[in-house]
Each structure stands twice: as structure tokens, then as C-alpha cells.
Image: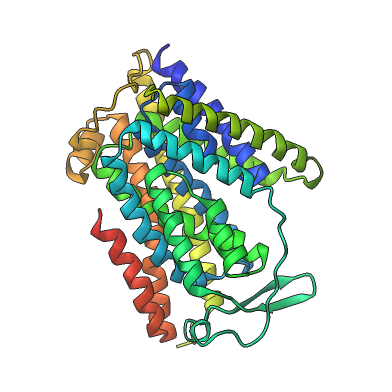
Length: 278
Length: 120
């Protein structure tokens, strides 16, 4: 297989990953790394590097739209980025010391957790009121455009959310994924922000979190241009197309299929990790 | 001077992210075309991790290699622009919060910037 054929196949694979990730809301990164390592036999370090830059591209592209619509809670995002960037730096350092088999096993477990989390019942929180003194000092309580005009909300449990974001940051830095599922979990289930605010603010933070570990990956030579080029362009094109053809009806069955694929890939990653084949 | 509000900041941040991603994709695409023309018929080798040479990691050697007409360093430059986009977003936010006189958030955003720049 020549570089030309290899790049073309990678582009198509990444395009499919970006499209499915965007349609199902599970993100493209979760499927990219198994695709690169299991199918294309790419070393997991290179795979993480390529996935990380794709994550920055898609999250920044999507965040651009949400931020302008005023749905993301920018102050909440900025504050929690302290937790995610510190975690991401730690995770990126960890990645250089852990063996590829251990990384593969951790990746598999995170994949399973993410897939399961995406099927948990999404209660649409709406907590109102004055909020705790901490949220008032940090000006975290906000409002977003809801069905009946601008809707105010209050943020709960800042410390718990901050710690969960720290974990999400470590996993993002270690595995080269956005860890969007964990970020949404921290905001939705712990801080009780409205679902729309959680998802868009999480997306807003992913780019900065990934940039924090990308510096380390870059310096250590994990980000290969020949590999990253088709992957980044493919994921970005797929994600953009996905955001255009967003249709509610068929998404739930598509999501189920995609989650099953993710579960299979997760088991395969863990199996290969245990047998040191990765 | 007109008072700077959160909405102004959000609009600028949105534009910045959009153009950063667009610019980086174009540079990556241009580098990719050059790379495929020059190396398209070779065999890819990603099975073992070797790390990247200096021209993929440092701006000076990278720029010299781009001027020699190499594609891979040009792709890497595009990737650098991409990584720089969220960092530029943070810089803009710090300036914005300064203009809003929200010094608590100047500090919080400053911490994030220091964490990122510390590691590059």
C-alpha cells in the first residue's frame, strides 16, 4: 500500500468517524484511535497525536457556532478549564511513561463508560435561585436562550464539578480524546446545568484542554504530519457534514448501532492490550 | 470608549475560532498536496514509533524546510496554527476581561494560559 492509497483510506475512515461522531453526539475521537491502531496498525502514540489535533479542529469549529448563539456559559467554561488543562498536562506526561498496552486497556474502559453514559436518561435540569456564595463570586450562574425566551439558571456543586473536570482532563491528555462524555457528566449530573448548556460549554472547553496536552505531544514528536493530515481533514469534513444533515428521527437507532460498534472496539482494544499486541 | 460587554466578547471569540480552523485546514491541505505529490508512491511506516525530526517540532528548521518546498513541515505548520487557535482564544478573553474590568476572570484565564504555555 502506497502513501497515496493509505492517505485516501485514512481520509475516508476519518470522514466516517467524524460524520457518525457528530450525528450521534459521541464525538469522532472515540472511534479514531481504535480505527488507526486496530485496522491501520498505527502505533498508538501516533494515533493519539492525530486524534488530538482532530479533536481541536472539530470542537473549535462547533464551538464557534454555539458561542455566537450565546448558549455556552463562557465564564463557567473558563473557570473549569483551570481543572481540565492541569489534568491534561498531567495526562500527557503519564502517556509518555505508561506502556502502550496499559494505554490501550485504559482506552477500552473509557470507551465502554462513554458509550454507556450516552444512554443514561438525560434529565433536563433547571435549577434556579440565588445560588451558593461561591457561584456568585465566580459569576457562574447564567442564562441561555430557551423555548420561552432567555432562561436563567443556577450552578450547583462547583467543587465536585471541578474535580470531575480534572479527571476528564487527565483522560483527554492521556488518550488524545475530547472526553466530552465525562465533561457533560460533570456539568449535567454534578453541577446540574441545563443539558444544552452542558453540551455546548463542554464542547467549548475541549479545544483548550486538547491544546494543553498537544504542546507536550508536539515536543515529544507524537504528532506526525503525514498521518494527521488526512485524519484531521477527514474528521473535520465529516463533522461539518454531520452538523448539516442533523435529523432527529433516525439518530436514536444510529446511536445504538454506533454504541455497539464502540463496545466491540473497546473489547478488542482491551484484549489486544492484555495480550501486548498493541 | 464604548463599554465592552460579554456579548461582544462572545462574537469575537466565535469569529476567531472559525477563522483559525479555516486557515489551518487550508495550510494543512496545501501541505498535504505537496506531500502526496512528492511522497505519494512511497510506503507508509507508522507501525513503530520513532518520533519526529526537529523540522516538525521547531519553528526555525520548520520554516527553512517549507521554503525548500517540503510538504510535511507545511502540514505541521497548519497543525501549529490549529493548536494556537484555542490559545489565541484565551489571550483574547484576557484582554476582554481586562476591558470589562473583571479582574477575577483576568486571573482565572491567566492561570489557564500559564498552564498551557508552560508546556510548549
